[in-house]
Length: 164
Length: 164
DNA sequence: AATTAGAGTAACAAGAAAAGTTGCATGAAA
DNA sequence: TTTCATGCAACTTTTCTTGTTACTCTAATT
Ligand code: FES
Ligand code: FES
Image (cartoon, rainbow over all chains, first blue to last red; front, side, top):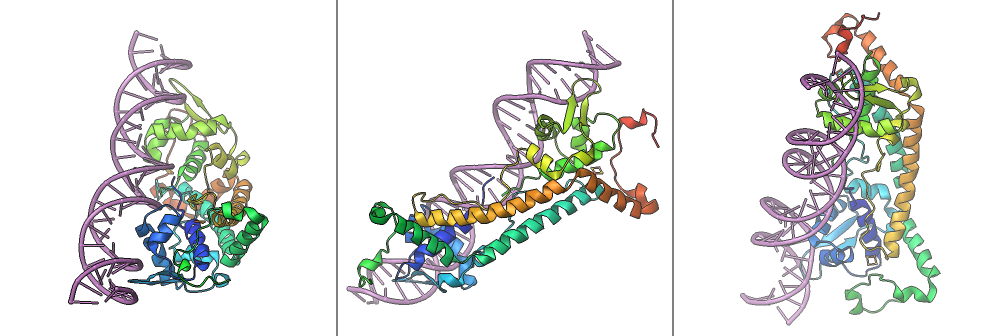
């Protein structure tokens, strides 16, 4: 089965975006995660509708966070992506009138929605800033080896004043 | 993504099998859930290895439960099926060296394994006999309309004495 | 005004995983 | 020895995500 990796991918990008002073183009984001710019735009549509990011067209355009990382939870992103089904376990519909099948579906649905509740509650309790600070911690721990890491650096930042 | 419906399907069939006095052939099981006998055999292989069912070849062969329903939990079946991944949410591996991606993966993994734990614990607490009795309850509630339902009846049972 | 850089979008191609299908080998009962 | 069944391997179909192409629309730069 091919798992939907948009959540993980968009979290990664949103956190990077926070460190960019200027709007980041779909092209740039696409290169960061080795994919196609259209995939990025598609993924971002939901986030835009929910007001997590905003986009600018034309020259100098691109994507920017519409909120600080501390005000975005994993749940926000999950839902903005159009949260499909969380589980890889499906309920067969082989014989809809069969009471046995129905009883099975009921029990499974119950167990799965309980677990889904736990997951979503976790998601709600984690802010993107939490992940960002995990990242900062790891980064700091590396000390002087930092520059050996492929941390994606703002493209257009070089034109601007290097702020601190 | 196409969700794995083997759990739901095998639960359904196992519970039915319990009501059959004789071994049930893959062909029969396949018809019950509108699929191909090979799909049934494939699904049953895992259950057989774990000792939940056993199979007989040749004339008069087929599948029988190797344990009473009360001694089989959803978790047993889930694991016997070769329990792939429970979630439909994937961890992107777009830039394995990126510490941001790594931090994202870590948090997601953590949240997901917590929820998976809850699910598996539910599974462990539900025995197939629990589902079977739900079914019996529903059936009884229908009263005299029972015979209008498409409850799959043992094929070869007609040859045997009608037990009670 | 012309050029360039960007998002927005639809339509299509590729990839992957589950499910379904076919064909044949093997074993057991009748 | 014939018939009925599982066991298995190889292939096809289906369905969903991802990737790609081609084009339109918009805004800044020149
Ligand atoms: S994508 Fe995370 S460092 Fe470049
Ligand atoms: S398959 Fe459940 S009643 Fe026939």
